[in-house]
Amino acid sequence: MLQKVTAIPGPRSNNLLEKKNRYVARGISNATPVFVAEAKGALIKDVDGNEFIDFYGGIGTLNAGHCPEPVVKAIKSQADKLLHTCFMVTMYENYVDLAEKLAGLCPVKGESKKVMFANSGAEAVENAVKIARFYSKKPGIIAFECAFHGRTLMAMSLTSKVKPYKFGFGPFAPEVYKVPSAYCYRCYYNSTYPECGLHCLENFTRFFAAEVPPENIAAMIIEPVQGEGGFIVPPPEFLPGLQKLCEKHGIVFIVDEVQTGFARTGKMFAVEHWGVQPDLMTVAKSIASGLPLSGVVGRAEVMDAPDPGHIGGTYGGNPISCAAALATIDYMQEQKLADRAARIGEMALGRLRAMQEKYPLIGDVRGLGAMVAMELVKDRKTKEPAKDETARIIQECYKRGLIIISAGIFSNVVRMLMPLTITDEQLDLGFSILEEVMAEVAG
Image (cartoon, rainbow, N blue to C red; front, side):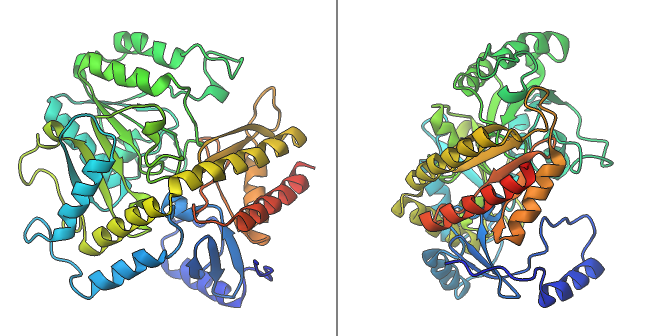
């Protein structure tokens, strides 16, 4: 049972906050003043002894829960043997073992697949774009509104939310083109949601005539479910339609599974829900239970286009991270966490839809597996974003022992990425806290 949260931030947290404000760059934001001392499963304990239910899971890095025992054991065992070399100079076994594992696991097009490793999701995206451009000998990249792909130059250029991610950081990488995403709740063309005319697909005819010819486009990149954009789940025809479009015009189709991957949506990878097979896939976050690791998995023909030395990095595929990833994937499969994600999603969507019936503040409820969210609006007809109310809900939840975070281009979406190892009791208690806060904020 969760211990009752007392005065927060407590004395030790306040001391650390003072130190943080003195020494840590102001640009590093913090959603809560919580300093974590330890965590296990879906529970977090702070330095003052307060316990919290985790509904944000390291923003999607902890699908297998905090400190899963087999992963911790694998990390300790590897640390005794080898911390690091550099795979580009002297190689080690678990790098190639993990590459083999992902090549067999990722639903990428083609019989033969190859893999490269980096450190973060943004690095994976940067490398995927490099590989696609070198393979195609074309410069243009298509990305989508509401996308988030990272904060480095190319990744930030692909990202669609201006504040806080892009404002004041231009100029951005050239030859990046944005098109509308399949954001049905806020569709440009159709106000009768959930009916859909798939205008987001039809738009490409005009786009290729008015903006850039398809002959100039190297790649298209998309998140199967847009994460930071607000957990936007596209209609069934959208992703298959994009794949057909890319095949028609010889465009490399890149799927960004950094947040959606590794059992989060009820499948090991989200694209499996649509039967889509991209040319390249980026992975990171939950691949190694929180250790820094990312990768690009793709058709061998595309991945082998760059010459030796064109891609790579000193720390990419660190042996400890690779050991953690191998243990994490085994653990996810043994514990059937994809099935657990589907069950969590059913329960979560049921609770949120019940709240939606009671509180007009909730404009939309959506999700796929255990990747669920509610979009808050001041008025259901105008859909004016309820940004302030969203921020208040986040703060009031943490005061009651639930850590949850926001999303959306208007910062009005409450999103949930609870570890898939969360118990039914913890899940129920978390939603009870959320509903208590919702009743208070919504009046």
